[in-house]
Amino acid sequence: MGVIAFASAKSSPGVTTTITALAAGWPAHRDLHIVELDPAGGDLVVRFELAPEPGLVTLAANGRRDLGLDTYLAHTQRLPSSSEAGGPERRILVAPVAADQASAALSALRFGLPKVLADAQADVLVDCGRLDPSSPAHEFAMAADLLVVVTRPLVSEIHHLVARLPSVKPRAVSLLVVGDRPYGVTDVAEVVGATALGTIPTDARAAEALTLGHPHALRVLRRSRLLRDARSVAEGLATWLGPPACGGVQGGAGPAEPFPRPVEAPPHE
Image 1: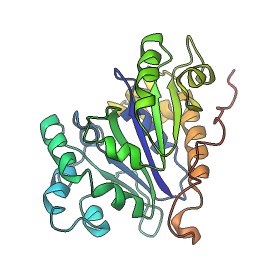
Image 2 (image 1 turned 45 degrees about the vertical axis):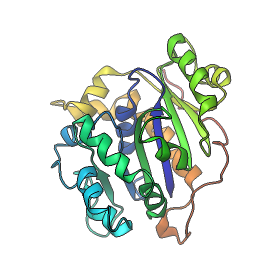
Image 3 (image 1 turned 90 degrees about the horizontal axis):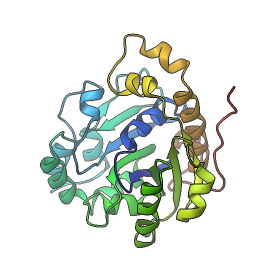
């Protein structure tokens, strides 16, 4: 268990969709929390058809006096795909759609919530939006056990990463690439100075099934390379985080060092 933050350096390479795909492929025996901290506003309340409250805004209002683990949990919601009572939980802290509300809530929580997330007895995936030192989500990205930078293998985005990464000091950083052309994840990671994590394919139909709904969503996802590769990456990340809370391991996550090796997706025909 532990905290993994996700962010991009420029443009919109699909951080939220990537987290959604990883969550769909996350090992079923592990508790998982998705925490939406994008100061530009959230998407998951709409995608998952959840109530706007409780969520980030109500947590910020109530956490001014008592920001502890119980308070945080009280403002999360159960994901529709969660297991039955007694099984591993899938919970989400949703951000408001409006950027001004999201940014204000994050500013109120930026110094207290990172420690609370670290104490959660679950794997925590945090959507931090764009990687910017001036962002109210910056502290969350730096405090996470691992920062995963999501990018497309395009020259323009690679240049932004090269310029941005030296100015941030995460505990550990890995690179996840969306698409494999014109450059592979290993090539991009070497240029930007991060450890290669893996590749998520550009699969518009599967991404639509994850984000906008699809009349045959389950069938599309089961057959999709997106979900297959996301499951491979998710399993690698979960292994790095170490045994789940139910395994009797107390505190902390994986080793405080970069991801040990790239998570390679299975070969495709």
